[in-house]
Amino acid sequence: MSRIAYFGPQGTFTEQAALGLVRVGKDELVPVETVSAALEGVRVGDFDGACVPVENSVEGAVNATMDALTEGAPLVAVAETVLPIRFSVLVRPGTRIADIHTVASYPHALAQVRKWLTEHVPAATPARHDVHGGPPRSRWRRGSTTPP
Image 1 (cartoon, rainbow, N blue to C red):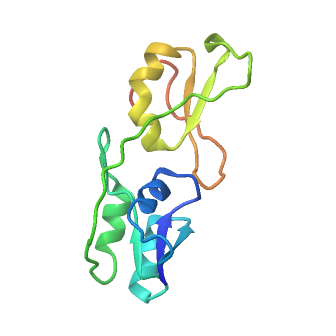
Image 2: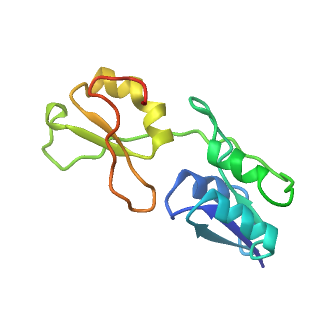
């Protein structure tokens, strides 16, 4: 059985992409905390492969991946997948749009929806959230459509 690392945790778009690339019953998916950890794990033999984000249609190249690919021994890409992304605004029942003051998400996700948020949830402040459980960090100015 091959062990394939992916930039986790479970439930991320990277896991969804990895699920479309693995051989059911023949590959084990292992979430890791960083892109660097996934790629370095392949380099040292802890994993047989890794699934990491390379590009996003709005933000372009994923810098963490580009940086990690330049460190250490060279790696070879053997597959790619294009994953259509859809986002949802999740709130408690009864919450009105006007009641939303903060929208927390991963930085690349916020970049992909910033125009929609500005048009539909103008009072909300985007807050960058660490995908591994860190607190949201609000660094955008209210009403701004670009990161600092």
